[in-house]
Image (cartoon, rainbow, N blue to C red; front, side, top):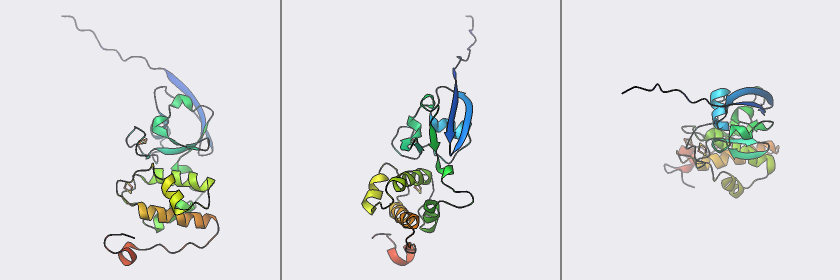
Length: 186
Ligand code: FES
Ligand code: FES
């Protein structure tokens, strides 16, 4: 029997010129890729996390032209000319974004895998609704799955960041061991 050499099928390339975190980027990528893959693999922006790839976990959330999207469900071919904000774009120069600072202060990250998506979704919310209530925060983050179940601290952090962004004093973080007891329950 003659063996037939396997050949790699040719893949089309895509010229992708778009804006990421305020910077124009112009690159050539495999046309089958998702926005998530372009961000992580072609641009090295690994803050955006690769979770389920099914639109279920929220780990890959980014802001695209002002809308919160799941980058695992956005094809790269949809992105030319558009503007994306990832978690790397939250930081303002050397300063952490208030959301980042409040997540740190409130212990809102445990393993941290969900944190970039949480931060981006929370920024999207507070940009639109700086006075978001606890219920509105919970609703806005309902698509972001935290496997460590740290939701109380996350909601605390987003509330505190909202106050900071409004120029209001934010209460000191509640320390679980002092205020919440061993169950963290409130
Ligand atoms: S990786 Fe995109 S929603 Fe889970
Ligand atoms: S902190 Fe671990 S998944 Fe949310």
